[in-house]
Image (cartoon, rainbow, N blue to C red; front, side):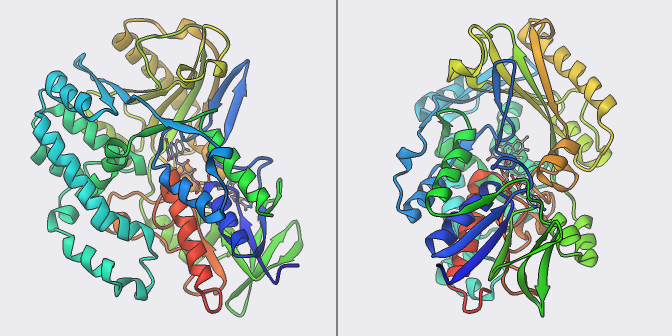
Length: 493
Ligand SMILES: Cc1cc2nc3c(=O)[nH]c(=O)nc-3n(C[C@H](O)[C@H](O)[C@H](O)COP(=O)(O)OP(=O)(O)OC[C@H]3O[C@@H](n4cnc5c(N)ncnc54)[C@H](O)[C@@H]3O)c2cc1C
């Protein structure tokens, strides 16, 4: 019988990772998940012989996953296998230009020079700077609890602070890229990385130029079996380490007595533990689980990240001109982000992302067919999507017809749709915002909600809506920070 117990609300990637870490620390850990399956946003959809990754489709920085397995003392290759993909993304521009983001550095630089007229030296210098920034500032800020005073007096932190330059905070990502690149296409490619945390390159600070480092220096990976293999591997590891999962179990409230988290309430039943970790959306956690309207209202005032509108299409033929990851850019990128964050609509000419895992594994679609995950950025917070979805679908089809020189619509054999309200319903993401708050302001970019409660001891937070941010690698980091806070806590704080 273990002497310490922990409850985790939610089995998103961070929730499961935190569960593993606490189990390794010899806690008795139970994860309560409102859905009937683990993974939250990182789950699977199947229809008519086609299978689709429900949410995330881009896998970068596998070192985070490797570190977790290493921490748990389990060989990762017995749980999951993945490999670097040759082409990270195929970009289609409105002016007809096509660009492959090759993993091979020489091929990538040659493509920038030959296809986009962007000198190899410029791209090399940019990527070198992005790596430097990531190693010196990014790594320190992303791996530690910023809101702990002790963090700020550690030597690497003081060194990282010295490396911060005014442009990283005061210039927007787009301004930074305009100062580096001469072609609109290269600027658009690099600007797009702001969407990796649901932000606009025209508002988010230049510090976000650390994001391309992960993909363009580190590479894009494909997990065998699709992204769901990541959830499956984490779940198997957690079970192996003794974590208990209770599905179809929605936490109604976190029990706090004398400013100490004591457990949760589910269906009127009190379940007690020494500490509680919420992997649910942080707004939801304050509003519903802590019944703290004042803090919830404060959080609601912060601009939310973008959401997504996803069409899962079973396509009745193969398109050899497409790859695993494809982007069809909008001709007016700035107007697209104004639409998303100011008028709160999907832009009439949206940038379209298409992910096709059957390019890697034919078994993901019936023979001779393809599984298309078609996503456009969408504003978070709107509730009425029926009309907008019909309109956006027609805009997507029109754009693809023009750019692929082929009508896709007659080949759509089956369809499922995920809109922002469905993202909220499935995973509790407030307003369907994929990454919690946006990084469109300096405060939003550098200061997310901490991984612990300052008021309630024994209460911790992990996942994409808290520090250090959204996306699989950062969610895994949030679980690591929580694990370390608990490991070195005197009184679970
Ligand atoms: C369409 C889409 C595309 C994306 N693309 C990418 C990508 O390509 N690459 C990438 O790295 N990231 C991507 N992301 C982001 C990534 O999916 C998330 O950042 C990450 O999966 C979030 O994990 P999490 O740990 O925060 O938990 P979540 O996935 O948010 O899960 C939270 C869990 O908590 C549960 N829960 C909530 N409330 C309760 C309650 N009261 N009781 C019990 N359980 C509760 C939910 O049911 C859910 O299972 C994408 C997301 C979406 C939606």
